[in-house]
Length: 295
Image (cartoon, rainbow, N blue to C red; front, top):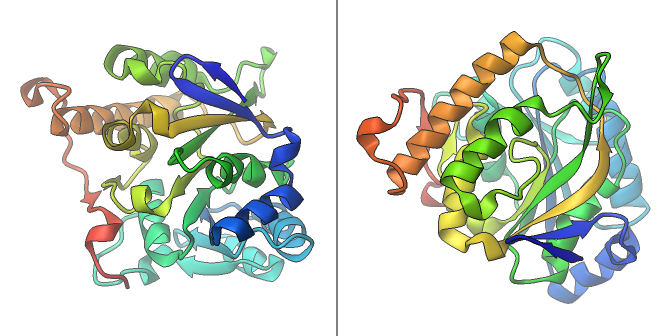
């Protein structure tokens, strides 16, 4: 572990973060671990992710207690593949059915929070290629070993399927999200991958957060996380390389518009921005999961 600005950094390759070492920490702290994967049409990758977690972190080493795939009514074989690989698969609309579902990543995360039971909840995206157990152990390790930490975010090297190649992925992080953090949440300016979908929470913090229902969820959460636990409660862990599908510039532009509106809405709600200057945001928000009864 090393210090870098206000955000503590860890490396998933540290021996202390091996699955065997973490099982000992888990037993000492009587901690239950949940992994949740939000999906929408991830048939090409979800089987490999789930089977790796089941084989390496549930059967070979009893680290993960609960593996849940929350699906947004995929029209491919995502659900059946994930089930066959060993995950519990729930359709998002079946969790908290009294609340009408909308399709969106944040919606899946909110409903997954209601459905999971772990003291630590680790989220990973369903489109990861070359998935390895260290994506889980690197995120939950710092939480198991340091009770002062509440939230661990992944950092990694990302690739772009273009002539630019290695290191040119993560365009929205580099060109959009990180500059926004530097301007409005400078205590998080050293967070490498604010938009990344791999992170782990202690349940008490996770259940206290409101959820944007779409791709704006990660940046909006950072505003509330800093307000609740400060930068000293946040860490990031280097997971090496991350391979996933790249999106077109048109797709990224639409996503960034959504992300920006959600971010500014939370800044205004928490007193960091004048509400009169924040962009209009009329899309649904979900209340903190700890404020409602499931399911």
